Image (tube, rainbow, N blue to C red; front, side, top):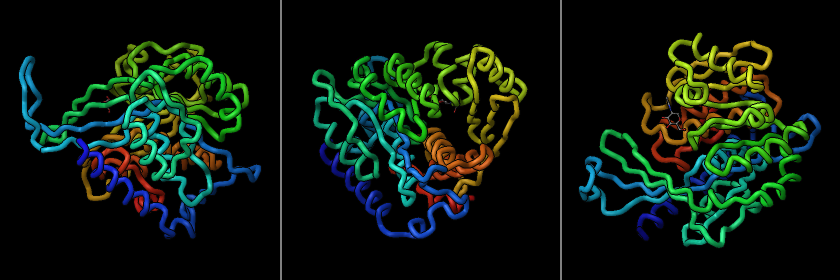
Length: 356
Ligand SMILES: *[C@@H]1O[C@H](CO)[C@@H](O)[C@H](O)[C@H]1NC(C)=O
């Protein structure tokens, strides 16, 4: 375990160091997209992610154990990395915003265990502002236990830990931060009442919220649908959320419209290798095909959706039209799947520009 932690940290530190070196992106931030840190008002408001943090503990096995069976791991150590949709989205946003001056703020709950410090350091090294995160006194850091088989398939169990320990008071204390954000990213790995409180505050202040529907599998409140600017499911999640069949594009649009009839505004659907589709509030549909994957094949899809959503949000805060937001997001998704692991595989802006 210790060796795993050290190894993961060495990798994360190396990546973070690479990010902070002066590079082409620093001299021409987002040149291809014309992306800029400053908003229209000349103020660089932070991108705020309120959500989960897990320590992802990956165990390599030849095959999954059967019921009541014990199998040996095929590697002597587990590997430990930053995980959880909230942390992944914040880290992706921080990496993509490098050189633009826009801060990426993560609000999460660290646990009362040794992993908390490891995770904090790794997030900081990735450029994430963790100053608004809290520490749970009672609960350990959330964990994602991942079993990885040689075919690249990952089977996991999530133990919520401190992600389940949010209080309503804590959500209320975030109001000022949320109202001063350029955009807010939410997922469903913390109590839904927190999401609702944050979305309500952001909506009232005119701050766009992107609601990732990945995480807990339960019906979504109509009020939450109304308060967020973008509902962001993948195909499976859209099917789960609406109970409608998702095969053709017509079916995807019909499911999206059913969410709109419940009060949702924009529906941003990721379709894996088929790209993505945005059903706008006014009914217009924007399509974006998948962009070429560097290296030509999917190595690991972990974190791809998180990178896609963070990139979309970032381009949106930079005042880009939906078409450009989706193109930038598609580039981030393509880079993310080309590399193994969660946080270390998150794309940088320079890597996205190579794809575009
Ligand atoms: C959609 O996202 C969930 C995670 O929220 C994942 O388990 C599922 O495999 C994804 N579905 C597709 C089709 O990618």
